[in-house]
Image 1: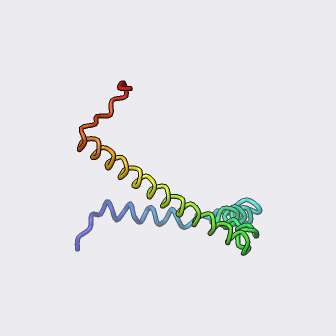
Image 2: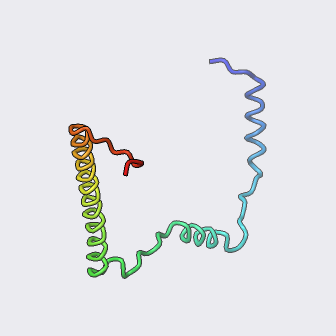
Image 3: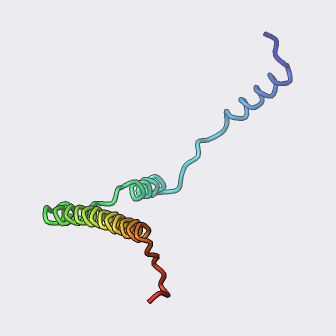
Length: 104
């Protein structure tokens, strides 16, 4: 495989310039500061101790159940009200009674 002599020369020149280079040294305590910063950012926040007590768990579960039951009851009552309104509307149409708010 043929290579370009100019590229070979540049590669050799770059490799020769690296021979006298020294390793970079960080400032004192650099590694310690970096590790402390990483640990501070990665460490998960602890869960409060009261969150897993049985009384709080039972209260939370009870609240969720209460909200679900109240939603079901609300929807059930709204459906029943809608059915009563439909029945009343059907009855008034059947008997020729029109509900006009201005008729007294």
